[in-house]
Amino acid sequence: MEAMWAILILTTILAFLVPDAEGAEFGGFVGAEQSGNDLQTVQVGLTVEWKHVAIDISHGVQRPQWRVQAEPEWQMDEWQSGSTLGVRVYPFNTETIRPLLAWSHVSDLIRGRPRNDENEPTSDYFGAGITVVIKRFEFDVMYGSLGRECRVTKCHSDSRTNEFKIGFRGYFWK
Image (cartoon, rainbow, N blue to C red; front, side, top):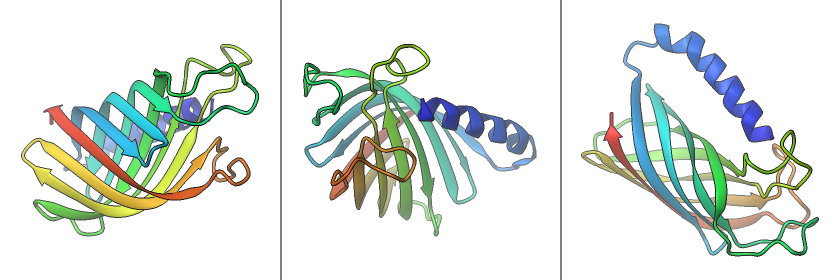
């Protein structure tokens, strides 16, 4: 549910900023991410990059490896619907290798309120690393904090771990 609100707020802000944002680049991508052993995602999404900030909104499938507290019958390792909202900040915008700071929120928009009363598996990731750009392909390597069952910045007790995260985005339109 929080991801739906975040997407609504970001797209509203972008609607006001983008007409005045000269030099903003839009792109469509197919991407994948792996965070330690705990989360895998395969997504199709849109990105808006303006100056040193990129905002990604994507949807696809995710395979979380942890159990939602209220659902003992829920199978771990099953692929399910997943949406990702991410912000990448590049302090130095170079041609091929760019340092980055990143935040991403992964959740399942199909589960949870207002659709039903099931809990949705969520995760938040804050990290720093580098992005390697090769033509229309981007590869991220980051190290940071992954929290499970998060509500904005507060996560389920003892669920936050420090992990590496790798990501890939192949742009079919940019």
